[in-house]
Figure 1 (cartoon, rainbow, N blue to C red):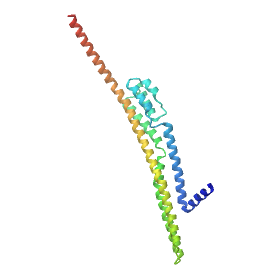
Figure 2 (cartoon, rainbow, N blue to C red; figure 1 turned 180 degrees about the vertical axis):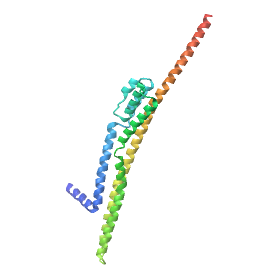
Figure 3 (spheres, helix red, strand yellow; figure 1 turned 45 degrees about the horizontal axis):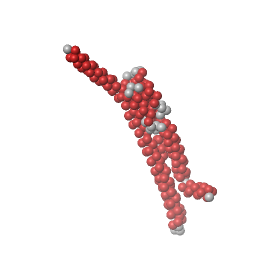
Figure 4 (tube, helix red, strand yellow; figure 1 turned 90 degrees about the horizontal axis):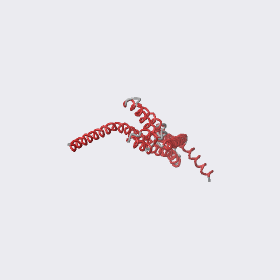
Length: 238
């Protein structure tokens, strides 16, 4: 049974010609890239916000050390959040410099996550074009055979040449359609990661910016309350 299937695959490749061989190589390369990217996203847990959200809760309560302990900085989002928190706590630079450095690090991480997505796009673009090229070459061969046959044209020769030619288009589309779908899905995943990075880092800055204002407001309320209590005590003494 296995030998029969293997022989059918060989016959299929021989009928399709070199274009089908190239498309088969494209499909293997595309599958390898997709599996590699899925493993990368899964191992890094790049979209996860679980630990970052826990750290942000502690950060809003002005617990910087506790916030840093919640982070798993093997994850891209946590690494950016951790760097931002440490830079703010140590006050090594002003906010603009910290933002620029965070943006630089984010671009580097996103570039790594986008690695090999461009080859997928190229494969998705070239596959149907190669299939069309194979069809055109097959049709040329079929009409050459008809011309060589002269008046004794066998319709089976023409029909056989046509289906062999159309086979390459079918293979090209069969390779391109799933590759386009997977490439779009991976691109969308990177976009979500970029959005989550921006959102988490922005929360670090805004939470720290609100903190002094909140503390000032509480101090003002306590001061007003204390003055009111002093006034009441003075009235009772009188």
